[in-house]
Picture 1 (tube, one colour):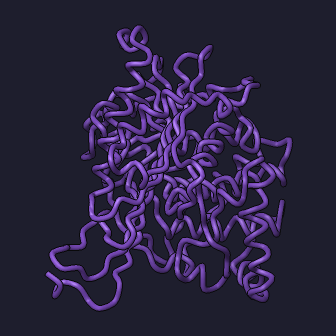
Picture 2 (picture 1 turned 90 degrees about the vertical axis):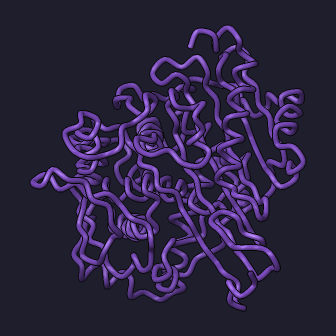
Amino acid sequence: MIRLFSSILTFLFLMPVAHAFPLDAAAQTGIERLEGYRLAQQEKVRGNKLPAGAQLAQHQIILRLEGLHVDPLSLYDSRLTQRIIRLLGKEADNYSISVLDLSDPEHLRYAEHNAEQRRNPGSVGKLIVALALFQALADIYPDDIAARERVLRESMIVADEFIQWDHHVVPFWFPEQMRLRKRRLAVGDAANYWSYLDWMMSASSNAAASMVFKHVLLLRHFGKAYPVTPAEEEDYFSQSRGQLRQNLLAALQGPVSYNGLNLDNLRQGGFFSREGKRRVPGDSSVSTTRELMRYLLLMEQGKLVDAWSSLQIKRLLYITQRRIRYASAPALRDAAIYFKSGSFYKCRPEEGFICRKYSGNVLNLMNSVAIVESPAGSPELNYMVTITSNVLRKNSAVAHQTLATRLHALIRSLHPVRASQQ
């Protein structure tokens, strides 16, 4: 089997393909693919049928912890932690996990295991890019939500060399053909800011993420004069690499600290594309499950930038297409799931070993961030989970799916009356 490998380590950086944002938001946001997916549910165009949990309208997605004054992460439950460790079995040391059970508002439970273990966030780092964007909008338009919405809806982004290179496909809607089509972003592809943000968060396109963040830098620099001409864009990026690095770190790391998150435990170092990293040098990326949990907690409290921004980020995390990895567990079919995932695996030659997706023998990171509201719309069970793992030679996507099934059963067992009402 060794002949199947080159002598050079194989590096593969794989992100999820799962689509987010409620389907009734096309007119409000200008995200064109939402209309195609909506029509697919009516069987008017070809497309996947969505599970019950994926069909909420915008108004049904709410922030569930606004007004909460206690810090739920201080409510550590050692018994729940031990039960979760038993779920992980003999590979527990290779997992980090944080679980916050919100099902009974009078008796919140928090459990964690290896929650301060630092790992590369992979695609989950795009949560930080989203935070950077909404913080920039709030800084420029602190009292003008309509202006923020206008920037996202009316500002057009045209893909350029910053997208190079990315293998992820994104959905395009062609209304004249009544057809949905998926392909890689190409230089010259134009869409509004909302669409690029949706492609970044839902299809997890590295190319889209790099364009979103490129325009965060421009937005922060030009303020209310944004959007600007291509010549002004080029002039901005002609600054020294040292100055651009300072701008990048201020844009990505400033909002993390400003919102009360710990930079030592949660940060995105820079662009997701090779060309972006070449043009604008950055820093390292890191995450822990505890700090990722704090991000979700601040969002649900309406404290991630502000209540409007928190709600938009939650909507961007709402899965409205094919569920993958942790979110693909059949037990979660009726649930609304707000989800981000990412993986990074690395292989080297090993006798009898074949390098496959999500099964690296040198590194096999899988990260999952999820909020589960079951059943969707009127949840009796509501919990958050953040996971990072590094279990070598095993399919980590399947492992996270299995863990999701077992954890959901555990949460149900804690609330037998609520679970029986589903």
